[in-house]
Length: 197
Length: 197
DNA sequence: TACGGCACTAAACTCAGGTTAATTATTCCT
DNA sequence: AGGAATAATTAACCTGAGTTTAGTGCCGTA
Image 1 (cartoon, rainbow over the protein chains, first blue to last red):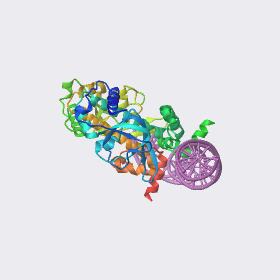
Image 2 (cartoon, chains in turn yellow, blue, cyan, purple; image 1 turned 90 degrees about the horizontal axis):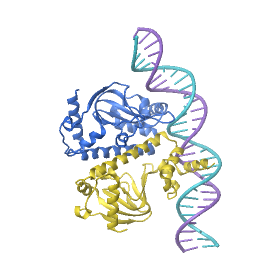
Image 3 (cartoon, rainbow over the protein chains, first blue to last red; image 1 turned 60 degrees about the vertical axis):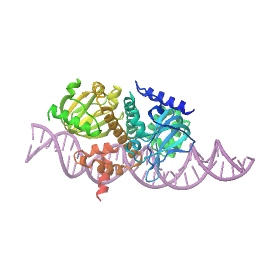
Image 4 (cartoon, protein in one colour; image 1 turned 180 degrees about the horizontal axis):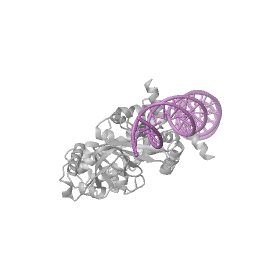
């Protein structure tokens, strides 16, 4: 995976999310995405730091992890390539990130400074419509997750995870799955035992 | 509050959410927003119905309420005028709403069919940027709510509600506040008792 | 091959919040 | 104002999930 392939993949990814998007190469727009590699265990950025970058994951798998004041870890999302990644909040508010992005499987990604990226891209035909479609989808996902926490038991949330993200289930340690559905590893183990019987 | 005043208020509201938005009267665009009144206890739409309309609340207060398969009621949000309102999911996916919008205080609102509204408005300079800003804010709100459910205790969530929406606290029955923070009225009563002492 | 570390499971105990039911306040309606 | 319906509180009890601790299996490195 080289820079050009990654840029190509990004444009295809973006195109697939909306309709009618087109744009020239990033270099023409004066954008200079950086191609970077991250190993398992590294972080794209850490909770508490400014995180003004938009990432496009060309390969790999990451998790959004945050730690509560009491020291409990929680997983907000798993994101598998190809996908954009980053903290919407940190980008648009120019504030610190409320979560870290931890690499679970080796990542090759493009990194853009959000502000120049957004300011340039919004001039391109179809960009804003596509970005709107992405934001709407993100919002709907969060809404579904909110409702799962309130309406579903831990066991139901685990089953829902298996249904929705079953293809990730064997790539992710159980303790991280537990923290994604909002329970302890011990509780997840209990649930799994019960389900087996 | 008449049609013209409501339309004016909407444009001002929208302008205040972004920068650089401008547009002519809705009638010029071929949009025909309907001005409607709703009484306390009525619904803008109900869970399970198609909900293709965007509402602009010129006055009043509503709640987004949904019922789980097991029959438990849950409040996703309280929205006070002036504000837009509706189900993003139902509008953009042209699907049924997953929640009802129940009127808590008398509402006067404008109703737009989402698709013609979006298709017309996105031609207007600054509309998409503003809508992006609104979606980003909505997403961030949901993200904060997701994290509250996982990281905070019921008591902390109640205190957070008082802090963030304290001005609504005495306009909303306690059982609805309870269902908003994801607990039973009995549990909320216990918490309030404990906090008083 | 052994050893250190991590992931997972298991069992015992605790506790926050759910459930049920009875009691007292409020609100609403005529 | 009076009475019915609804909202809020309280108490007693129950349960799902957290906590702690211990044990088992597994993988990687020497």
